[in-house]
Length: 68
Image (tube, rainbow, N blue to C red; front, side, top):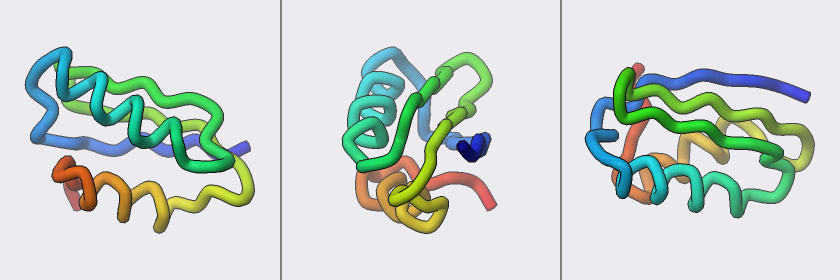
């Protein structure tokens, strides 16, 4: 299992947290997602077939891009 943490500046409220957690959880292979509007971070645990590229692309797609 892989764990990644991203800073996502557009997370401002509970609705943002819900959207990010729901959308990322739908990716096959994503085991857990914990988003926080307090520190604007998302922690994702995943394994195959999910990939970091897919996770980052999904964040862009839902308009919550991770900070580089």
